[in-house]
Length: 127
Image 1: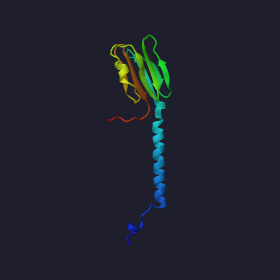
Image 2: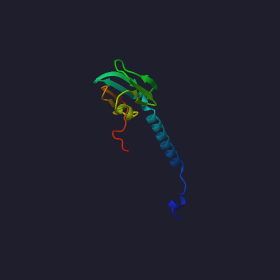
Image 3: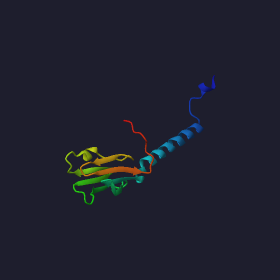
Image 4: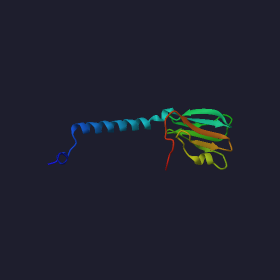
């Protein structure tokens, strides 16, 4: 009888290696999913940085001085425009953003919101 035919089950060393690899993967996934702390939203008006908001805490009714009728909200690590009176409402329709480099733009009010951070998100998102 061949040795390979007799060996049907994993030995103890292989089980330990599989367990360690699985544990390392789970820890890595938990670390990646909790990396919101390094992300911020920078809100600029007419090119000048006006406000920097951490995305790690939920906040409602964020308004800007000297800018009327636009309200931002931070929820679950994302920022979005909750209310605006712009005629086209493109900034409202953009929805929530959370990845580094994403932006929301309101042309009538000359406002931009950009996500910045120190984490290493993917360079390209497909799909």
